[in-house]
Image (cartoon, rainbow, N blue to C red; front, side):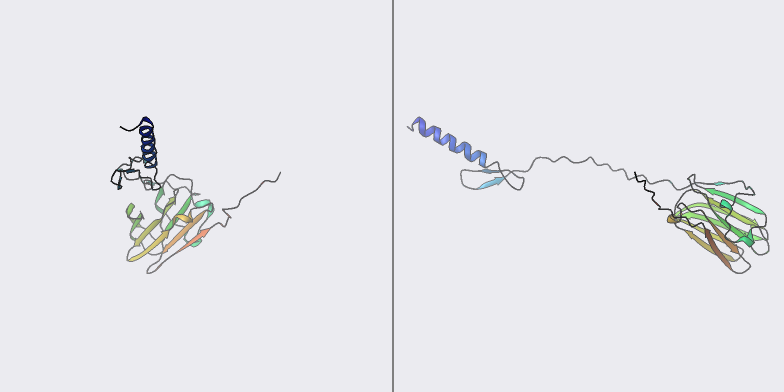
Length: 204
């Protein structure tokens, strides 16, 4: 029969072996067995942020509304094509509700003809409007919200596309003039030239 001291020594040995078996560098606990082999236990559950099946909500595209024309509604007096300023307004539109106030003007430099104006952002069509545009008549679009716009214009058999990138919306004011002549079309952009990223430091 083993002495009491032998039993205590064996108990201490088993306790040390058991504690040593709980330490592992890879985060998994290993437990010694009497046969000299080791068995790995499956690590406990880890805590992570809850996930949902909902997709992130994208900003809604700008809305378009008809805009009444005022004699001074050109963007801060800017005109990209001054020679096209005269003539009757056919229709005016306002895009978005943001802080910007930039414009696009489409001028008919030929006899009266049917026209179509299509405004979009990416694959989203914001406006598709048809008009009969008299000679010298024009359409206006005021942009109040930044986005990557595409404006497709057709008057008679003449077609023209204007792209307005979102990074064009900054502290400067700009106006795009589109001249739809009898067989050709062109557009120009007139903009102020302010340094938008100027930082003023105060020294004390």
